[in-house]
Image (cartoon, rainbow, N blue to C red; front, top):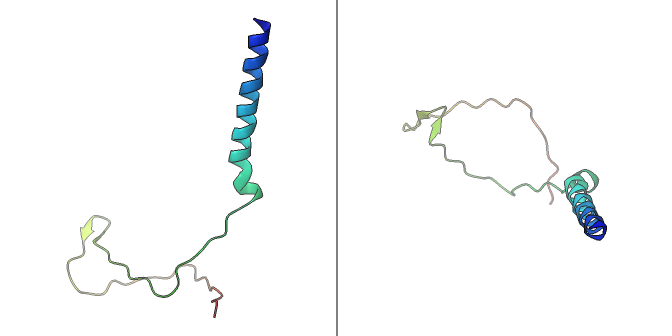
Length: 72
């Protein structure tokens, strides 16, 4: 009975350590963000439940402008 209890505790400890490593990996080794190159076409069907069937332009407000260094 004691041997089974030690084995169960050992296995659960290994699982807990593995889960912690998986959970904290993004903090230690963050991924690099990659953006699309060039212009990306966007087609909107609705905004806030309102259908966009007309060809009238939609006003867009840039809140926080971010400038990116382009690879050329």
